[in-house]
Length: 558
Figure 1 (cartoon, helix red, strand yellow):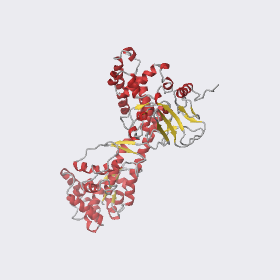
Figure 2: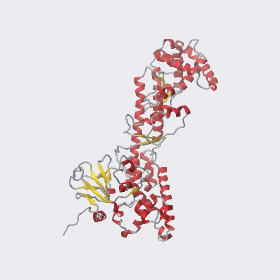
Figure 3: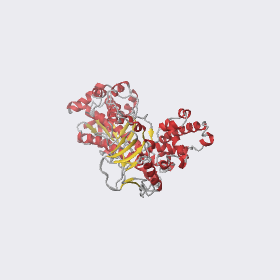
Figure 4: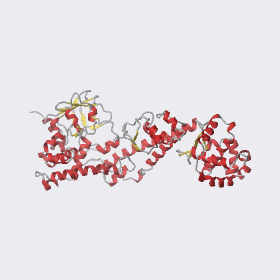
């Protein structure tokens, strides 16, 4: 008398294993299913070490649920009235309603009765997604699409004599959502059922490739970077190990490079330390004709226009090159645009442009980070949905925090290593002559005190004016900078004339009397002050850096 093989201590999984084998499937003799009642759900473990290239699992095509079986099951009127996805989901609901009479009953019994995707989140669970790319609006959009499919399928079922209105009422929204989530979380590309020697993996990635459920194959959990092979055959789909699996180890699948956002929305789980995690930034600004022509010369992004992924896997930077190039363009002055046109993909155009680029990136990232509520205000982590959402939320915040540090690092490095061409309030006050003139006129030479008193812009403007009066004795960088400004012509608005006149009268001759060695002389005219104010307004960049109590104002004279 043969002894029945034990697939699991869980009765439903035991029957499922027996059903697989009875219908021509294969489960490597060392593999067992753990109980689905554990915190991580059911796992497939091996009781003995398995060498590389071991055949692990086989699912015959006869066990798969695919669109061809669905089309054969329903009349043409139904198939024409609903989308393929709706037809697949309706078929699964119908099989569930058959109970034990369904051929797929042993398989359907092991599927979770509810899933942990955001469509199953309640309002308290959703609070953990506030601020994330995947938010309430994204979930509502997915729900709306599926609900419209369910309504169309329900109407099509009511028109069938074999179902009718009474039968159609059994096909509830809750069951349709369950079936749709089963497909989003467990399906494989239907192309695997029709694999030929001419088939390629690009066909699997085709968005028009319809999904199929492969019982048993979908019972293996995902682990990124796992070496595993899907080996499609004429009549079955096989799974073959890539590396050795030690005794007691889990057999894992590899869904591909999925971010936590994709895993949570499609599968209902997340992975701490997921190497494929990203943060999506959406920027689709309106460009001028000159900017449009340069943008067309920049390297194309692999993603749809306006979509940019912050990722640790991006080469050289968390920021994708497409986003850096775009911000180079958006922050370029009229004088910098020709430089950018000559080298559209340049990593650096000018120091000013680099600082301006990272300043704008900082503003964008910080604005996004500000959308995350404090964790202390969120509901307790009392269920798996919130715990998964927290992992996703934490990785989003971590990537953006790292992006902030990267941009700040770029700016700080310029401030530290390019002091000869980068001017700040601190560097201005290191000039002993000018510093001695500032104190009697403004009451302090401490940068923070001047900033808090609102004097920074004026101290900076007067410094630029003073340097202009000394331009013949200054280093070449200053001479070129003044020459460029003069060549560019007047900047600012005519409306500021009255403002400049009032300011000039308030300053002179008072500052000249307090510090004649700097502010006295015929060169200190109202026109010079107006030029200095406009130059400062045009050339200065204010950046908020961590650890600084006030914004750092920078002028590059490169």
